[in-house]
Length: 93
Ligand SMILES: [Cu+2]
Image (cartoon, rainbow, N blue to C red; front, side, top):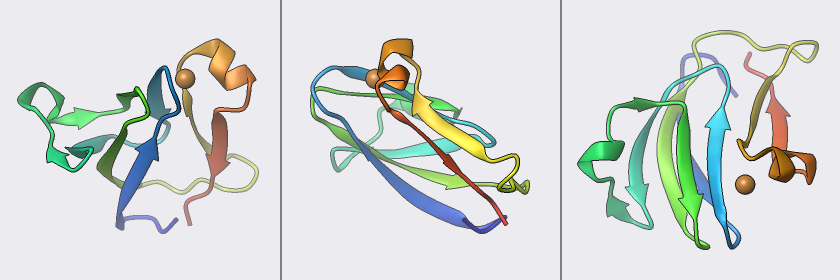
């Protein structure tokens, strides 16, 4: 991912509720299953709930470098889900 550039991320859910969290940024929820985000989900977020096999899209930008030695993470905030693999890392250059 390139520092200072906006990206549109789409996060989809399997059954269940998943509070999806990204490190190193705040983001703007744009759409939920193609519909404009409701008022209570607008504004800067670092976590968004995705559930019931739904999906959401948000706009994200990273203003700080994250290296292979110190990458950022994204993950579900439910510990059991993290432990089962709902977690990843990425760099910003
Ligand atoms: Cu989860």
